Image (tube, rainbow over all chains, first blue to last red; front, top):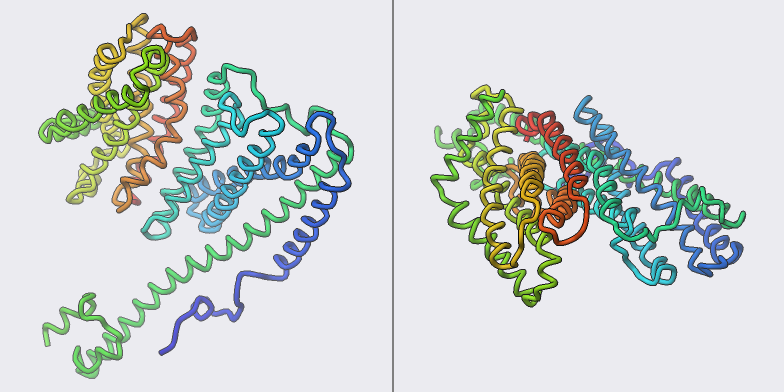
Amino acid sequence: MTTTTASDITGTRRRGTGSRTTFWLGSVGLVGVVVLILLGFFAAPADDDQVDAVRMIFIHVPVAMLTYVAFSLTAVGSVLWLWKRSIWWDTVALSAAEVGVMFCGLTLFTGSIWGRPTWGTYWDWGDVRLVTTMILFLIMVGYLAVRSLDGDSATLATRAAVIGIIGAVNIPIVNRSVTWWSSRRTLHQKSSLTDGNLEDLTLFTMMFGLVVFSILMLWMMIHRFRISWLERQVSEGNLSEALIARRAEAMVAVETGRVGGAIQPELGRQPDKGGFGEVEDSK
Amino acid sequence: MLTDARLVAAKDLRIEMRSKVTVSQVVPFAGLVLVMFGFALDANRPTLDLATSGLFWVTVLFVAVMAVQRSTAIETTDGARRALLLAGVEPSAVFMGKAAAVAVQLLAVELVLIGGIIVLYDASIEEPLLLVATCVTATAGIAAAGTLLGALVAGVRARETVLPILLLPVLAPVLLGATRAFDDALGAVAVNGWSWLAMLVGFTVINVAFGVTAYGVLLEET
């Protein structure tokens, strides 16, 4: 008995989703992470106020910025799926959403760890950016939940696209409402990039972190895109191949007069699953 | 479109009236939640005074999830959604009608809940106009977002669990806005409830507009 693999269906011998581009992206990303660790832990100076906690911004700020980039891509991909029926853009939306949810989770996690020594608390309900990011995270978790529902890929894409757009449409309202709701002064500092209080090497390390995490995001998105693309081809390829195979078997059965009976085991037919029940009955 | 929407809303409300689910199950559930909150907060009067608005709207959100699930189930059963499409009714009219029916049910439950917070939590209404305006606006927003997301999970086996995951984060601004506006209307906290009402109007307008646009796609494709 032979087993059909994704590579058989797609007609390619390649194993995995790697390519020369992803190999170099991954390698550069890996080296970048090592350099970032060295810069962050050994080269960059400690902050006068935040002491060593400031080193968290080398991860926190890049992943927070890239979270919004990823979710913007999801919104754009969702619109283009609904408008143009572009499978490519739908796959981009899915890949960006998955990577974005991971980055958003990292943003909340690293922010909480940083908040404890800096603010004296892991979580502050009066902070606008914190609460808005949490609600965005929950909406996008819902997006992924919809993607995991049963149904054909086009239907799932449409359902998820609506969620992707609802998330994008509602985020300004969430942000505004949380701003008003926050009766206390926000604990979140102003943008680290624009307040001009960072040391040169600290700023450089943070920007370097942004470049490294951008490369890693791109690397992950390309792999996720290819996995999703192959999954779609496998599911659609399986269906169309199964239909062609069944039709061919039916033609053979009719031509040879061997309807049902002897031919059934060759078809791998399961009696309880329907199939050629009517033909068999008519024998 | 308005005639069709009225017909759809009347159909949904007629089904609810005949099944008596809202009266016999949803309203008792809402009352039960108010009582449970009282137990959870140890019936502490100052705490209840401060938390009344929030508890009221959290209860409304729970009820909204149930109402939207009911509204979706009506169309899922026996392929009624296909029949609705074949009847040639504009999807936007179906959306408006179904959202209106959900809103009417929620408003009925809210009326009972207001009686509940007056009796159980000793709340007093300082600004009735703000209270009514908040109820109507927030309910319209909840119904619009709920109807759209309800259509999104229609026909899905796990819709009972997926719908709250999708709906509640989207309704977070309503919870914030309506609670603050109620705080003002009940005289619990000194805030400007009318500015929160303006935010609720914005939420409702955006979600109704998006629902009218997107509902057709979901109705035909899912």
